[in-house]
Structure formats: C-alpha cells, structure tokens
Picture 1 (cartoon, rainbow, N blue to C red):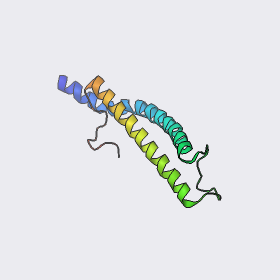
Picture 2: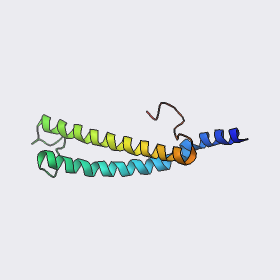
Picture 3: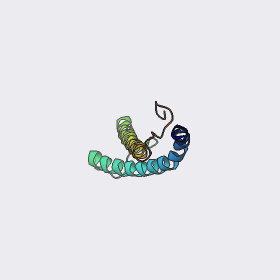
Picture 4: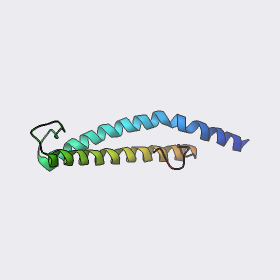
Length: 104
C-alpha cells in the first residue's frame, strides 16, 4: 500500500511543483533584473544598459551587456530551480521532476 501511495505522489508532484516553480522563476527574474542594473552601473557607471537597436552604442558594448544579463538570469534561474526542488524533496522525499535529466 505504501508503495502505491509513493507512486501516486511521484505522478502528482511534478504538477504540484509547477506553481512553486513559476513563483520562484518570477522572483528570480526580478532579482536578476536588479542585479543586472547594479552590475551595469558598476561596469559602465550608466543607469541604462544599451539596447541592440540603439544606434549610438557599439557592438562590443551591446554584446557585453547581453552576456552579463544572460549570465545573471541563468544563475538566478538555476539557483531558484535548485532551491525549490531541494525544498520539495526535503518536505516530501520525492524529487519534483519526473525526468532524471531535468527540465531541459
């Protein structure tokens, strides 16, 4: 009986994790945005990062901003995903993603 209950828990847990994952993803995106603005201010002493369509900015500056922003968002997302998954596993004893390879 316990084995059947654990199997049911494994089937339902990825669906139950989705709202938590969404909330963590949203929060991590917001924090990554703040971190990027502060990082850009430290790198270039400018409040606004360059946009790809800004005629006044050069390729190097635009690509640097994109690389920094992408790295910060990837780190924030990984941190949020891993923290949420570990919390679910601690509470339930089950890893929240059915596929052992992860989401991607």
